[in-house]
Image 1 (spheres, rainbow, N blue to C red):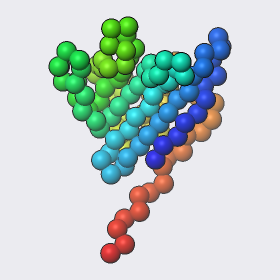
Image 2 (cartoon, rainbow, N blue to C red):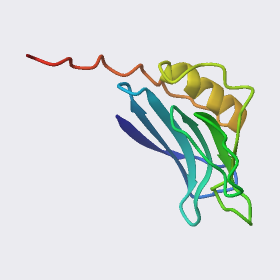
Image 3 (cartoon, helix red, strand yellow):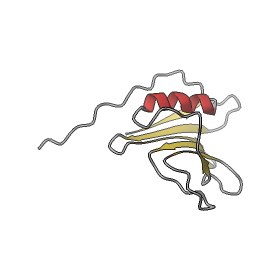
Image 4 (cartoon, rainbow, N blue to C red):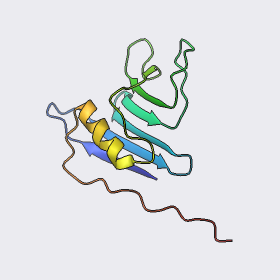
Length: 117
């Protein structure tokens, strides 16, 4: 499941946020994207990551923009305590940490269809 939403910026930056969720793994990603540069800030849960320096960061990590590595360098966020099976809880924590004020409602994803046979 995925979503994309425009982000209103007080200084007019062309931003949007993209979210994706795979309940079968489970894996969850939220990314803040600057249309002119690409992903500038992101949170991934349930996906392994190795930094360019070859250090292993793990399945819970945030990407931040640097001139040297662009969005390829990640770190373990201590302030994200919800897990990938709680996309709404993670969204709230991501918004708080990223300074995003979300005025809408993010609903939990629908249940996964099990095999028919």
